Amino acid sequence: MRRTFPILVCFSFGMTMLVQFFVPSKLSTDAYNEITNWVQIIYAFALIVGVVGLLKYHFSRVSRRERGWFYNLVTVASLIVMSLLGFIGGRGDGGSFMWVFNNMMAPMQATVFSLLAFFVASAAYRGFLARNLEAFLLLFSAVMIMFGIASVGNAIPPFSDIANWILINPSMTARRGIFIGVGLGTIAVSLRVILGVERTYLGKE
Amino acid sequence: MSIWEKAKTLDRRIIFLFMFLGVGLPLLAKIGLPVSVTDDVRNVYNYIEKLEPGDIVLVSYDHDTGTLPEMIPMSDAILRHLFKKDIRVVGMALRAEGNGIGRQNIRRTSAEFDKTEGTDYVFLGFRPEITAAILGLGTSFEKVFPKDDRGIPVGELPLMNEVSNYNDVKLVISVTDDDTPVYWVNYANARFKVKVVAGLTAVMATTFFPFIDSGQMVGMVAGLKGAAEYEKLIKTPGRAARGMDAQSIAHLVMIGFIIIGNVAFIMRRRGK
Image (tube, rainbow over all chains, first blue to last red; front, side, top):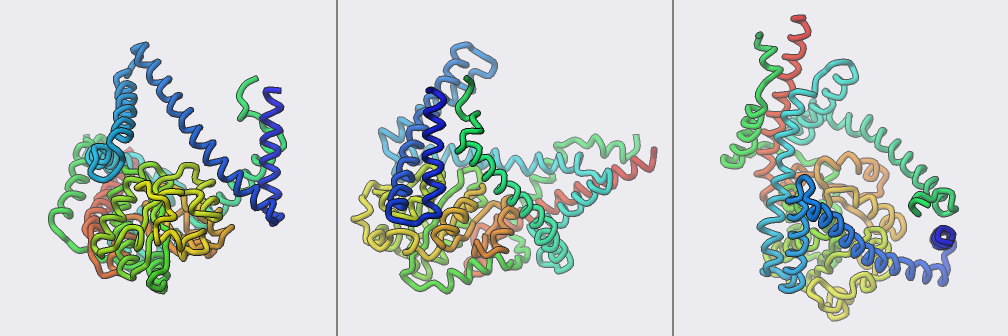
């Protein structure tokens, strides 16, 4: 029963959402609206489960003094402090919550993100080598896009034309192929889940 | 050891230094490198330009703070265009951090045009679960967002009395650093036929070319370059134009290092 009931629930809701899309009527629209509301409510509860799981994981690492436990402590402390600031002082402009958000969180995240430029430059210098034809084509495309699209080369017709050709033809063709593959794969997996063939989401026996 | 062998073991701090100078110097000394406008950005501009004063546009902040330097100039430029044309803006967020970002961005930009919250613009706040939120808005904005970000019931906001669902919105703009516009296309455009525009980080741009080509998206503004193009179109130079100088020089530095690395690689192979 522990496995049968979730499969039945999944089948019922999966089929309801599938059928209502193709059968427009008041009943199907109402069912669709109701289920859409439920999803949001369930997701809110899932967030609570997520926060509890996160706290349990980090607390256990801190209590066992595992390697890097201090960072686990920072994570837990940050979560608690931000939650308290939000609940007590509110999230409005000018409050302490937004002060931490604007003056600590945003600059720190942007700093980490911007460090990428330095590491990418170093990695590109050492690793982006034309070792064979495939590597050369990849290298050529990357340099052309970088120069012809994202920088001053965009104002120079031969470079911008080559870069645009790469984006519009080989790149977009590959993207389309990936999207079609992802679409077909999603349909296949969805059907397997709805019909109860795919059961890994239920966890172990 | 030959110079080419030395190049192989070049101290990465030298590369970091050049990169630092490449990014830093153009920010200090304005260069003003040329920026040409691409069709994808022009399409967004033209679509907004054709909207009537009083039309309503939904702007969704679907990104986190890590990409703020790339995203905010873009949001600023688009919002300035919207407010300049007296188009009303409904803001929301599908990322938790987008809530704070979006609220401040809309309030700051609207203040430049003396717009009133509740009448000329609203910020509804954050909703989790992208798919359910996007689908829910197609039925009722009020059901998904019963109150705005300040806690005021949307029924008390004059602007929201004119917004029931996507039928009342002329355009959805998703400002994002991930593939959220795919959800907007799949659920809002495909099901409810609302027009979609994406404001993206540059690395995400290639994902969306097929959607623009198929007509599922009006256009996109990608990265700092896209933001600089938009600033050029609205004739209001801002942070993107300045940032583009730094980005262009940084790209040239990177290309230079790639070329040096490859020349050294070829010379080492010849030497063997």
